[in-house]
Length: 157
Image (tube, rainbow, N blue to C red; front, side):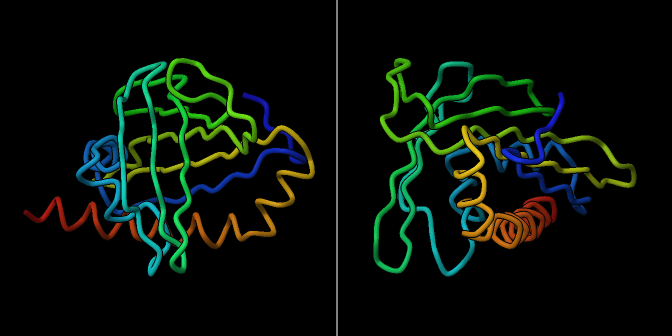
């Protein structure tokens, strides 16, 4: 995949957790709300149908405001890759105000660690800049740390 530096934002981290648990955290409505947005914000609703065309719906509470984020999965390679977008919602209904397509990959890094990559692809330079200015790297970096900590808790159980 060729990334466009003007419209694609990327975050890569080596997480101290096995990819099987990270995958479970990303694909389970039980686990995703535990880490998916930077605290103190939270996920208050989550519906996941993890298959191409399946819904990927989350609702966030940010400073008392509810933010719905409804989309669909485009590609699912179990344990390796998730691609989802808010360009469409369930039933391939176009979203009137799409924001991004996300590509998340998991690769074994040895010693129970995982190379975790999250790419946010945008329709325009302006929307990518807006996402960067909103704090993509800090926000998604915080979320990656929360994911790592939560996955470690699950692994210890």
